[in-house]
Image (cartoon, rainbow, N blue to C red):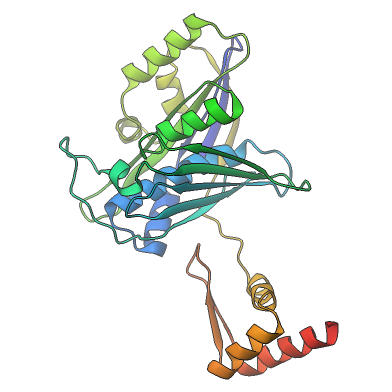
Length: 296
């Protein structure tokens, strides 16, 4: 099944939830960044989380950025989603390799670190973007994101994220869910949500049985009747272009661009999110510099 996102609400109006199946986009990120397994798992979790948050933005052209700086060997994890849930991301040190945990699982918490912050930036095309940040709890990302919603947005939230990496380092399954209590939900609702999560087991275990995100939600929220509100295809999608890279060159200013031209015959720019490379010849750089001087 292709990657997709499902959004739902409980029939009694006490819980809203979203889930994604994101194996293909996580595998695409692995191929682009040449990540080793623990980096694949960390970046895959970040991409899934960001996709679910981005899809919640309904304004055309809105976006959400999820940045995790944990102080671990992976460095900064960064993901950006559009308002459909299409996402792109990067990790500073994709070649990090750590020993497995005692339970045989990838040690994402140690790779990410837990002495830093999780930051969410929502760009709603207003004067200033909304920025919220919380301290990391353990660097496993799911619990850190749940803490962000509780602390920064005062929304009781449960989050599950998972990436299963095969022996050849490709992605077998990836995805996650966000479950949030709606106003008026009582202790009985909390108990039902917690019981359902415990009974369902891990995200990767659920996705191995079925990579349908609707099925994932129905198993985790088995004590609730759910109405599906939306089913949306999602993908790894970068919005870079030659025009954007040209604007990046212009942003250097005339002096720096002149210095660049003196040092090399051409400028080769690579997008940090994808494998798109754009080359600007010396003649093209001269034309850019001439236009900049005319505007000055």
